Image 1 (spheres, rainbow, N blue to C red):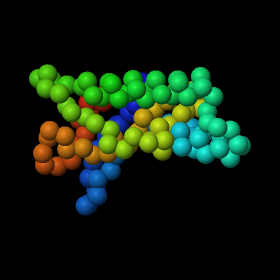
Image 2: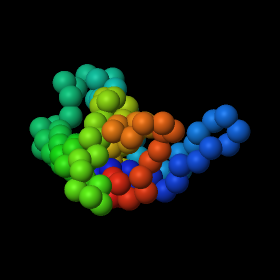
Image 3: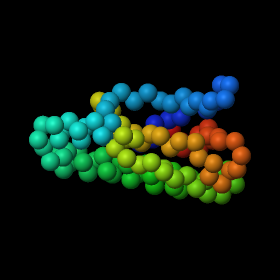
Image 4: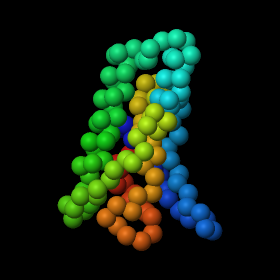
Length: 118
């Protein structure tokens, strides 16, 4: 539940595209900038811990993923930063931007439908 769902990956001419779930809300970076602008030292502890836990759960989920033969997918989020965490207006925390990872698959970049769950 803490990963923005990817619906499709395709190629148009020489460019790849990714269709993802739309999450309505600010990034964690936006929230941190807003608190700094108000002169606050950061997010309230309860909210910060909730966001941190959601991120940790998302990372644990993808790191533990295996293919249909039980082989690890070796998915690693290589750009974890506040701009890649969205906090929706209803309080859900979603990790985005795993990029196109070749992982143990070589050749064309690909996204396994359902590989991250959704």
